[in-house]
Length: 540
Image (cartoon, rainbow, N blue to C red):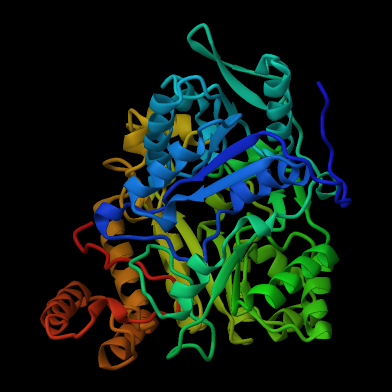
């Protein structure tokens, strides 16, 4: 079987077989939620690159652009005469939507080969394969695996010879030869021409607002006017060995990145073509290489290309970057930075396996604050076996960051067991009961808001966490779209850590919001400057 490898050449195109790719809905429409329109179907665009280059007809359907019935109709219709159907998904509604779409495809085209990939399927291939809906699960990075699957199908060969797959054989999962993480020299850029950008761009510029759990943050100067954002990624994997993350098991702690000049060329070309205002990087760890970050930031400045951008980085990287690099990042458009803070407890930080010191969370927040960059910092409480004191240490760090770095946005998420992570079995041993099927896994859209199982976060800790989230969210004006008396009061609560009457005050604000929202002309039209989260239930 021939294995295709990428070059930057563009060979003469010839018509070949049709491949149908479905990007599942990211939010449950029954809850009135939609995905932010800046979220492009990147995972499927990446695997489409090599087949598109080699002349295959790639039909990519983004379920987020259509009502559910219309999305399924388009996919089923596109699968007529296709060689292969593929889909993907991360934990949340995408799991359920991919399942239902694949059911529809299997019913209409029972002999069509079907494959699924993505983080969740890679971590729990047995959940996908035992349904009988899929011929294979692509494990981890999928670009080269997808090419080899296509070649095997065209040659009429079994998929057992393709590396990087999980198959269902005799009632159990069988994995083929392991496929190692590929470098960018083997891959091509996303085939952006497969996207009609207008369904993503026009609603944003028309000011159409959606109820979304992860809306694009507003860049400076756009508080009162619409803007257009896109998503992008230029690296794969992560060198951190975090015990709560599935990446170590899938990537072997490898990190492969698109060279800085290549990423710069691609984004500048897209900016000239599409005219976006913001870029949301979806890299698991964007800032591993300071040299690459510096080249990207200075390159934007040298070329005079202006757009805002925000990635996910580690506090350790920020604390070890040269001040000139941080300054270049700010000058070139960095306005929000996601930081995986993880914990405020020294022992838990050592257990996680992360390469950083505990005080680096605060130091990173301060470095961002003095440059006017919002630091979104995610902390976790309720790790399996974590003590109440450890959780309280995390909350204390959040209070300290909120009081010391005013622009920082520390958040606290209860731990959620996910298949494929080191702590999953320990969570099961302590009483966690996982969803029994794909549709139930697909209901975990707001999994970061609630406890995983009774007892993993004590009631007093959860109450304090909920109060912190309430006042932190209120402080930034997220609830009302402005900063007034309530917001200044919340900032004072956080600064003084005075929560003696916090629950009463929070309930009073809730009543106030309910009353005033009845008279608001458009309660969904509030604009937010950082990620909006639903008001947290105060009863834990």
